[in-house]
Length: 365
Image 1 (spheres, rainbow, N blue to C red):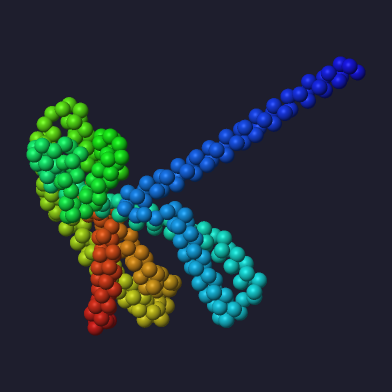
Image 2 (image 1 turned 90 degrees about the vertical axis):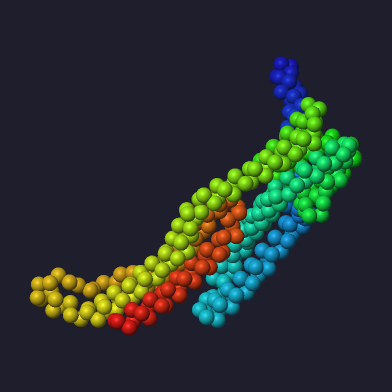
């Protein structure tokens, strides 16, 4: 009995330690989750800050949540009225459809709103990057002039700010505030360059920091960087001019040729279907005479072809605009403004061409 008691005592002794270890692990996991959540919120704040927006993440969640609720309420009220009045469906079916709507459609709306928001922020960041690259050579030249006049680098950067520099002026003001609060100028410049996905800006900042470390003539270095940026822009414009033929060919094939061909094909389908209905009664005579011609059966209707043509033209216009932007600007983001233009012109020519071709062919058939 004594041995059995000792055995039970030994087994029961480590249980408090196990509980302590269990709670420690649970606490660590909770802390790690909190840290990850804070990091995600901080990344979202930094991402929004790169676009120049000052919106808290809590407000964004509330705004998107309220928008999704309003849209779901509108859809729900319409479906309830439509089902009950038009089809006379029972309330059980209506309640089931409402449950599906508020579970799946609500989640899809939240996801769609966040996707649209991220796309808008990304476009805003891209525009800010383009604005910075446009005025960067002039800013560097003014900074070089201030350095040659005897100013230090941080003061030269501050006094080179002009209202016409826009986004770059605001960023330089942030750098000046950080340096005044004790942050090293190199660190502030690297942080500024890391905010934007611009190779030109990162190279300029890297060369400036290296020049400061080497102790060379910073004014001459900045002038040289400015000239290199201007030469690079001139080369890009020359390359864009050399590929203008490809841009014209893609634009003509997408905006003019494709909609007109689709319009003619749609009119031909209607003509063939009319001929089929006209000659359908004579198919028996053709078979008896030994000619294997038959107009029976249903093919592609004009309504189905119109849907197919519209979807095909929209998809083709979308990718053609991306291709034109890549050829001219070197990136697809700059071509988003071409998408509605291409789609609008393509669909307009398609419907106009279909109407004109239908009237012209109608004169002969």
